[in-house]
Length: 333
Ligand code: PBG
Image (cartoon, rainbow, N blue to C red; front, side):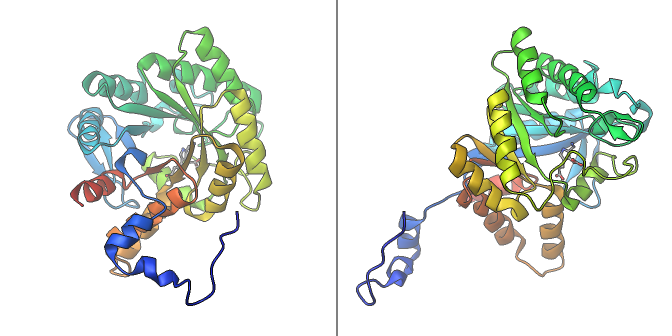
């Protein structure tokens, strides 16, 4: 639909911008607390909040502190929290067995959060990188990230997380065939109502750098992730990936990173009309925080404007490290 505009002065488009009241009436998009998914980092220990240097304001939390974060999130109206484990290097192996240990850090965190705050939706990450001696999302054999063997490992990981009580599984590994394999295994195990939010269009991005510090994967990673994550030059390929993952049983889909890929968000929403999410990743958070801390940007305004952009681009929700700050801001106005 092409908007029609009467000639000047019949149409003066500034009329609807003349006051805050009228601007509010004509505003097309809004960000609400119900749109937020809060990613948190968990670590071992008790009463620990360990700052992540490249992500100012973000801490690695011991499970008791993660439970407190979930309580805080619920109090603020944030519907979902997403858990990423900082795994002890001694648990990282070539075959990543810790990934499907029912009592690994992530699964203990899921149980503790669901026991204390059952109403919050707990999302997880499915990929082998936190548990992999070489930092990759898949199993490496002779220098190759092998697809099918990795999918078998991811299915075990998915089942362990569903068993622990996860509400939304987030496969972020970009292997082929993993959504279908997970969906079949979940159905067979009776986990009929577990959602899969597929990181379907995940680009090979430098903006994940601070995250890899946060989960302790930077040191381990050998090489790059270009043979499984998407090439930043591609757009049609994102649609094929989304279509494929929907056909295999994904309930919701994600585009990642966010801000440099808003065109993909819009194409996906227009093409499929399915629940669509973007991840405002660690590097996006870090650059906004860095500019704000230098006094180069108004941090609060930049946070709100960057997130409203996702809504305008068609997203139903956003994973963002700003979630509690945004919720406090929205609840105060
Ligand atoms: C791991 C994973 C990554 C992120 C989420 N899950 C990093 C990667 O793929 O290297 C990035 C999140 C962020 O940067 O905030 N599979």
